[in-house]
Amino acid sequence: MIKIGVTGGIGSGKSTVCEIFESLKIPVFHADLEARRLQNRDSLIKSQITELLGADCYNQEGLMDRKLVASRIFTDKALLTQMNQIIHPAVREEFHSWILGYPEAPYVIYEAAILFESNTAADFDQIILVVADQDIRINRVIARDQVDKEQVMIRMANQMLDQEKIKLADCVIDNNEVELLYPQILKIDKSIKENGKIR
Ligand code: ATP
Image 1: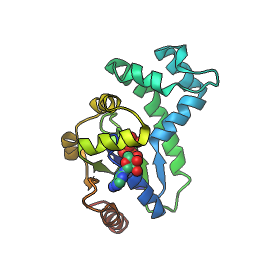
Image 2: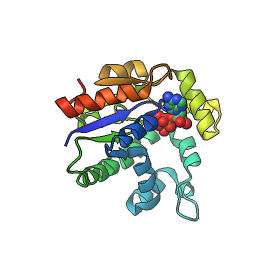
Image 3: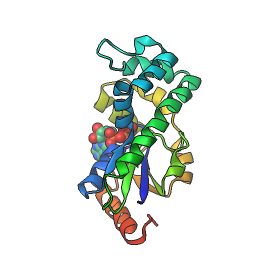
């Protein structure tokens, strides 16, 4: 099975891009959603997170307090690394069993905000990077999540710069709302289906 990674910084438009791939009937595994599911439901992961960040990270319903966790891990690189070491292997394992459900698909997509940063890129045949200018991304996230600029900037600071990621990606989708997304995606989809790769 051809495995394509789709990544991009916060607010770049990864999910929007992946919705278009899904409309083309391409299965998409949403790594960040899966991570959230595991953080709330998987007892081993929950106990590891509690041990790392404290019992107050979970409310009485057993759900993770994402704001509290974010305030701890996004201001402490060591904690962020350890948190990723708990989550990423578990998400990857889920992805490998999820793939088995799509034997007929021409290819599958793994969508994640961090791929290069988490050293996961080697798991994929090719990587698509979604980019948009920083100001546009910030304004999108403020509008989408009702957060302030500072909270968005803290998250951005933990992600690699687009200039660095562009060098590592096989293909870049421009989502600055100048070039239309659909034609860019149709071209990639056609190329993978015909040649087994983006270019
Ligand atoms: P995150 O990493 O925070 O999950 P993301 O990269 O998945 O973000 P999206 O959720 O796809 O980004 O996009 C962020 C916001 O910007 C959304 O509200 C989305 O609807 C909007 N958006 C994305 N691309 C476009 C576009 N081309 N035109 C208009 N709005 C857009």
